[in-house]
Image 1 (cartoon, one colour):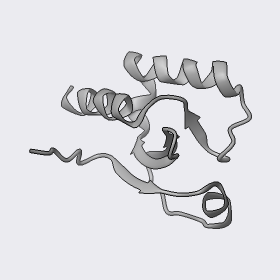
Image 2 (cartoon, one colour; image 1 turned 30 degrees about the vertical axis):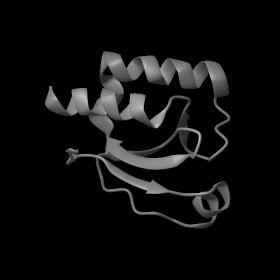
Image 3 (cartoon, one colour; image 1 turned 180 degrees about the vertical axis):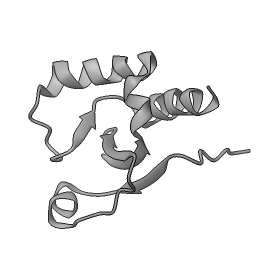
Length: 92
């Protein structure tokens, strides 16, 4: 049995696709890139202030600094961990 997170959108993009296409992100949301397969998620900006999400942002800063390979915020964690954290944030 699966579950759906209403506030998160997921799409897959290669580096070339991400840099060559303008992809709509609704007001109040931000696109982030996650995992080894580099999947793009659109999440609410409010997640950025949450302590659990701050841990992910600190990992991104340590690994990439301000030079993110996808041109957007790249978070170095597995998709499963990201989905766990965002589903917890969605419930709160």
